[in-house]
Image 1 (tube, rainbow, N blue to C red):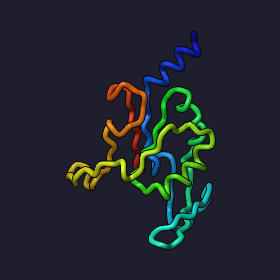
Image 2 (image 1 turned 90 degrees about the vertical axis):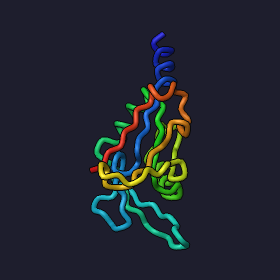
Image 3 (image 1 turned 30 degrees about the vertical axis):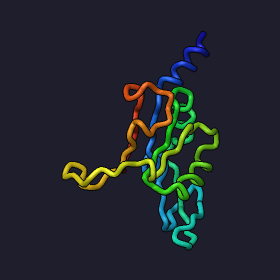
Length: 141
């Protein structure tokens, strides 16, 4: 019975996590103690991206994977985020990846002092009963 309850909970909860600055910090410039480096091609030029995982991210991903259907969203390009997630998500916890093309650009507002990108509920590939079951986590440090 406990296993069935956990399974039903998994189907009813969707956790959407922002990739950049929530799970990792990335830079085109070398950063001290990078956890890994990926190479991406942008406009016919190969760039090295230095990636540092946030403290505790591996344990965090393992634990949320037990309780949620995890979706990663980023306003970045898939050619950057896909190879990064291939390395970061070793346990294959992430059920879906949403990139720049899945985002909706929101206009500049004085409240945010910037343009913001967000994912609309209809673009989420979760089994969750939307919108009550979706938790979206975005962290800017």
